[in-house]
Amino acid sequence: MKKETRYVSTPIYYVNGEAHLGHAYSTVIADTLARYSRLKGHETFFLTGTDEHGEKVAISAELKNKRPKEFCDEVSATFKKVWKKFDISYDKFIRTTDNEHKKGVQKAFELLEKNGDIYKGEYVGYYCVSCETQHMEKALIDNEFCPDCSKPVELKKEESYFFRLSKYEDRLLKFYEENPDWIIPKSRAKEVISFVKEGLIDLSISRSSFDWGVKIPEYMNDPKHVMYVWLDALFNYVTALGFNNDFDDNMHFWRDQNTIHVIGKDILRFHAIYWPAFLMSAGLPLPKHIATHGWWTRNGEKMSKSKGNVVDPVEVADAYGLENFRYFMLREVPFGGDGDFSQDALIARINGELASGLGNLVNRMIGLSRKYTDYLVDTIDAKKYYENELKEVNQLLLSAEEYYENLTFHKVLEQLWKPLAIADGIIQRDIIDNKEKSNEKIMASIALVATILSKVSILLHPVMPKTTEKIAQLLGFSISSETYEKYIQNDELLERVKLSKIDTLFPKIDKPLLEVVKIETAKKVEDIVTHKEFTKSIIKVGRVLEAKEIEKSNKMLQLKVDIGEENPRQIIAGIKKSYSVEDIVNRLVLIVTNLEPKPIMGLESQGMLLMAQHKNKMVLVAPEKDIEVGSVVS
Image (cartoon, rainbow, N blue to C red; front, side, top):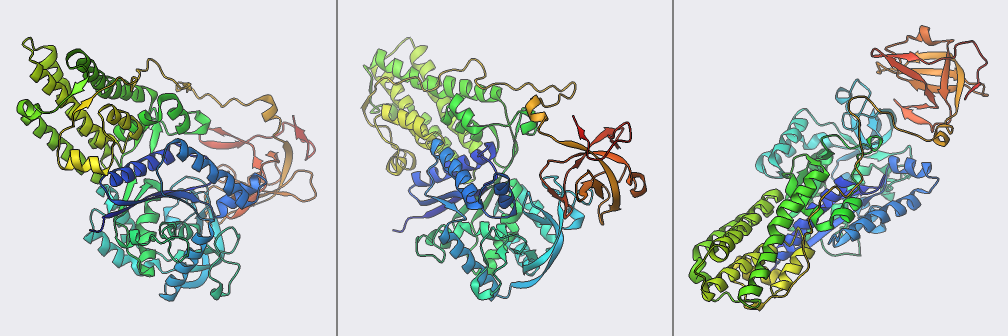
C-alpha cells in the first residue's frame, strides 16, 4: 500500500540579515508539522533555504565590499547554523544560487513563454527595492512610499519581460471560490480575493539594470536580462524536488498535491496570487494550502533595532531552553494571529504549564511508584477501574489530532493538557486523599497516569521532541510511527515497565534571564552613540544652486548643492511642503556628505540635508553667517 505523502516548506529566507524571531517562528511551525506527519507514518519532505538574488542583495554585498556570491555564502551559512542549533529536521536546504535551481527556473520560464504568457515591453512604475515589489501608484502612501514597509519607492523605467498575470484573474477567483480553505486561516483569503477583484496588471518578471540574478533562457537571445527575484524564488518549491534537473527525483511530492507552504502574512500576495498563476501557466499542480501566520511584537511594541527590543531567537533558546521556547511560540498565539513576546509571558508558560503541569505530574508518578509499587507500572487492571477516564482521554487525543491537521497548534497544546489534569485528579482523589488504599487500585491509578503520560508525550513529540523522548524512555518505549499507531490510533495501554528516576524536566524560573531593555515612554530618549561614531559623520556648508519639483511627488525637491567640490551634489530632500523652489535656491544649508548614495524616487541622493521639525513643518538648519561653502562643521 502506497504511503500518503506530505510536503512541508518554510519561505526561503532573504539573505539581508540574520535569522530573527519571525524566521524562527515560521521554521518551528513547519518543523512541528513535518515531525507530526512523520509520526503518522506519512512519507514526508521538509524544505527550507535561502533566497539569494535581486537588487537588494547586490546592494547589500557592495556595502560590505564583497562579491554577491561571497556575501550570500556567509549569510546563508548563518541560517544553517541556527537551524542546526534549533534541531530543525529539514530534508533539504535549498539556495537559489544552486545550479540545479537555476536550471529548473530557466525551464519554468520557458514553459511560461511557450504558453504565450511572456512578452517583452517597457516597465514604467514604482518599485520598492526593500520588498522587491512593484506597486500601482494608487497603492502608495503619500504617492511615494511603499504601502508594505513605508520606505521610499523608486520610479523605474527599463526594458522588461512581462508575465500575463491579468489573463489569470478570472481563473484565480474561480479557484479561490472552489477551494475556500486553500488559504489558512480562511480570514486571510478575503484580502487576496479583494486584491484580485480590483484588477490584476501584468507583472514585470525581468530586470536589465543589474545582473545579480538567474539569466533568462539562452534561446531568448537576450543576455542582459535576469529574472525578477520572486519568479526565481517561488519556483524553489519545485526545483528542490528535482524539477528539470538530474540531481533529485522527488517530484511525486508535488504531484500528490499534499503540499503546505508555511509563510508570514507579509508575503501572502506573492504565494496566493503570483505563485498559483505561474503554476497554472506552467501546467503544474497547485499546493494544498498556503498557511499564513502573523507577526510578533515585543511587550506590545513593534520590534526595532533602534529601540533595542529585537528578539534574538538564539539568545532566548540559550537562556530558557530550546524546547520551552518552541512550546511558548506555538502555545501563546493562535495560528494566523499576531503575537507578543515578553519574558513574563514565557516564564509564566514555563512555570505554570510545563513545570507545575507536565513536569510535576511526571515527578508525582515517579514518587508514588517508589512509595507503593517499587517503581513497577502494570496496566492489567487499569480498564477495570478507569474505563470511563480512558474513553475521555481518547476523545481528547483525537481532538488534538484534528487540531494538528488544521494547524491550530495552540489548541493542540490546550487539548493535551486536559488529560494531564485528569491524571492529576486521579492521583489526588484515589491515592493522596483515599484512606482505604488497596494495592490493586493504587497500581491501576499509577498505571493510568503512566498511560496518559505515554499518549500525551507521543502527541506532544512534534513540539518538544527531546523532552518527550526522555518521558518515553522513562516509561519504557520509544516514540515512532509504530508506537503512534499502537498507543494513539489503536488506543492500547502502556506495557508493564519498571520506572527509574530522571532529572527535573522543567526547573522553575524566578526572574527574567535576558537583559531587559528599558524604553522610556514618558519622553523620547535618543539613541546613544559614542563620540567616535558621531565624528565619523562629515557635515559641510553648502549653497543651493538649483531646485526643481519631482513629478508625482508631493514632498520631494531635487536640489543641486555646491559644497566646494568640482561638481555640485544632487540632494533629494522631503521639504516641498515647507519650502518652494524659489525659497530654497541660493540658501546656505548643511549637508551630511559621507553617506552612501541612496536612490529616492528613481534619482540618486548624494547626501542628506540637515533639517529640524517644528510644528509639523521642516525647518532648515543653516549657518548663522554667510561663510564659505565646503566649510566643515565640527
